[in-house]
Length: 229
Image (cartoon, rainbow, N blue to C red; front, side, top):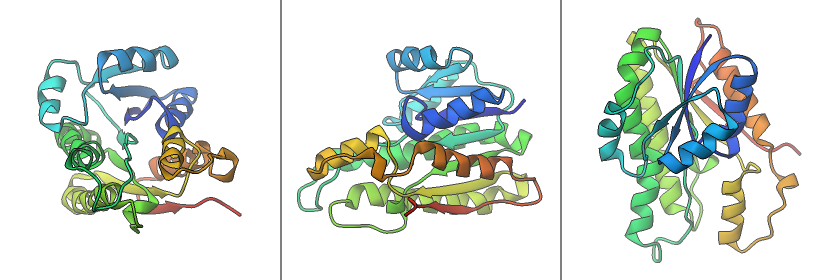
């Protein structure tokens, strides 16, 4: 039975992935930002182990995890948590830059660092759920895109560093997906949200599972997933 640690399992792609892994009998370790959120997620995944750690405060993750029981084996870490606040460079306040960089980039980097010793033992895998914005930046998306471009750089460097330890690293770049985050983006853009126009989270999850289940003689490094016609 494989053990998967997932961030962002409370909704969207992270929740869909957790359900698929749970249904096939894998073991889940789910990270929540606070105790209240952990109780909510545990209601949907009663068999999962819960960890509490706020990605928005990367400097406190080491302390938070040191107070909790970590599994002795982790086969994959999937970074599916994320936040987005749109705004032009001329208007976006520094607090929103800092929050997006922390949750989308610095937090995942620190969490990965803390879990690497266990991942090396199991020759596990790190999956970063990135975004199309991690490849191309558009007007109004500077802070979010910068965090996701940085996440790509983190994945590329980590892959080169950990190859000799047998740790695989995959970046997945979904296009617009029907999630609560997408609904929030549409609110910020002042547009009507029509989820049927976008990918189902299950489609993105299928691509993630392809990377996770790939035989050990191969590695998916970068995977772009776009809505179909």
